[in-house]
Amino acid sequence: MDKGQGPLTTCVVTGAAGFVGSHLCERLLSLGHTVVGVDNFFSGRPENLKTFASHPRFFFHERSVTETGLLTALKDQHGPVFAVFHLAAIVSVPYSLERPEETFLVNTQATLLLLEEAEVLGVRNFVFAGSAAEYGDRDRMPLTEADANEETRWLSPYGEAKYRASVAVASRRGSLCGVSLRCFNIYGPRQDPSSPYSGVISRFVNMAVAQRPLTIFGDGLQTRDFVFVSDVVDAYCLAGLRDDKDDIKRTSGVFNVGSGRATSIVNLARLICRLTHRPESITFGPERPGDIRHSTANIEAITRVLQWKPRIGLKDGLTRTIQWMRGSG
Ligand code: UD1
Image (cartoon, rainbow, N blue to C red; front, side, top):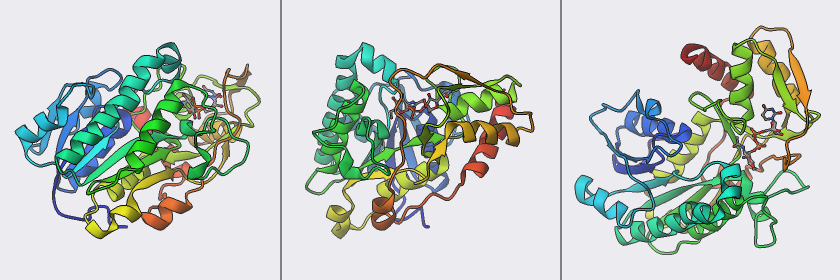
């Protein structure tokens, strides 16, 4: 798979100091592109920028995506922008339940304004960080892109706000190609394990490395679709770096990004214990309120249209995450 297609360009990455955003910046720089990173450190962390902060082709702006005229100001300073990778968002579901208005303002409204600005400025590709939360709670797996629609009962303002933005990005007509990547459960190095709402893999790996028991919420038979961060970065690059003008209509759209496989939480816990060479130390607590039972992506569309497929299997991805956690702990 060629992830560096097209010319060398200037790309804007919002949420550059986040878990996925920082990996994306690193990859774009390694492919030779110039990267203009934006983050207001609401949830992003300065240490995520450490490995590339002083790269000669990396420029950082501590600003919010809600600022009017943000892209125009960046273009004035850094020249024409080829692609905008818009990952900055309120990422906490519990926070979105407490502050729905702010969530819509940041996750939907600011996206619509950035999108309009990008179009006026002649940006070629706009890639948005969608979410599996756009599907709400569904019974039938795997989920195909059409399963999120106006009938969906979202479990949080976060899910609805991401859905509204995804639809706007994907239905853009004109010279701008809009792609929303509906990512399932992303994991890997730099994912913050410190909050109760952190991704289950970062929590489990953190506990296992610290030789503490892993706590499963509920019976552990709930399943998720785990996708390694470098595979997600592959998808961003395939969507954002393409330059085939005739292909805009075909490529614009919403695409699931997952492994296409269901993994139960109890099997995940066992695998992490095995990979960290410790006896199985697993406890069971009450089910987490509002938890969905199953979530698996159908990845046929992204495989067909963007020729993307996940390359890192769960065992390999967990091994890399464990190595990182050991090194950073
Ligand atoms: C993810 C989001 C969540 C959002 C949902 C919508 C993250 C971290 N969570 O939740 O905010 O509402 O998508 O699609 O992005 N678990 C344990 N023990 C733990 C931690 C988690 O058993 O210590 C379980 C959870 O109860 C859940 C599963 O592991 O059943 C996965 O949890 P999590 O990683 O939070 O992901 P989602 O539930 O998919």
